[in-house]
Length: 108
Length: 114
Image 1: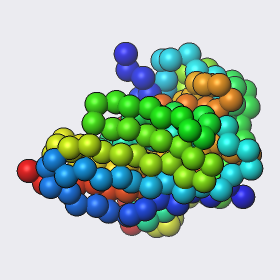
Image 2: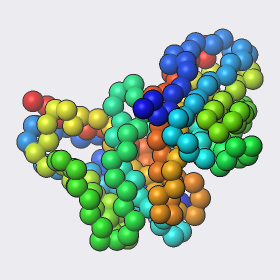
Image 3: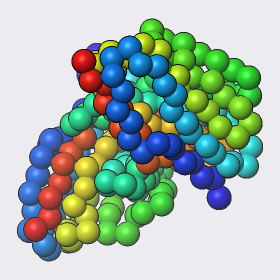
């Protein structure tokens, strides 16, 4: 059974304080790993797809990396507008499996 | 571009009432999905449709039915609502990217069953 665990469940940062979010997974044959951002009252919005260990992708202050067991979403010098819930999902043997999400709050 | 459109945005039902959640996508995607999102549970797949005319159960299908009306539309029906079905419901469509489906979500329906 494919499984995804995100940690921490919630994180509070000061503006400019860099940090990383973790997504650990176990799958039978990774087809792809996704990061989504979800704002309150809205649906998840696509950020990144990673396909194989060693792959990295960047968008503004966000950088996603992938190993054989986990993915990290690095946030560099975050701003209050980066506050959201970040979801990780993996495609393995069956349909996408989502983690429970990580709520990030960035204080000004 | 509208993307994935869900209606209604909010709904309150009494136990035993029925209702249908509507979803439409304008991206010409073959596959469509219904998820529910509960606090501390993450997104869970209720039903999906790989193509027009086909539907399959997901992780939590009990108490729900679906209809893939055409390529654009995928509806979710609650025949006899129960308080356990209080949740936020998301419709999604997908594009195959490499060997994995990339999901595009609607804005959700917040459903309360009293």
